[in-house]
Length: 144
Image (cartoon, rainbow, N blue to C red):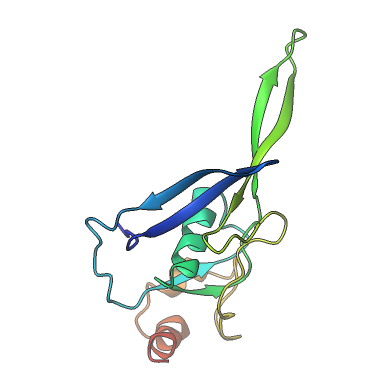
């Protein structure tokens, strides 16, 4: 489990501004001094997108890859009498740096090298082979 040092994780904002602040008190932080790289792409959404933004803005990790999904809206669904529902946006997420991620996502610090496989190209299996280009490039990423 990765825990943040003391700091803001996410702001919940409505039409009047910041409504709620979720933060970490820094207790039980694991290996806070160790470098941390996080791979992100358009499949990084929801809670993982909030975590990626918090790790980046709190300078706890370096993000590599592509922009995340970009779902920054918080919606409530109201059931209607005919059985259908109505989704109403009630708030939005902002990262600790007050960046609204809706439709743009969390922007990584650095793209992956071109030699890294993309989604659908055996990305996960690439890391299983110690001699693969992924593991060679992983060493290069961490030795910057």
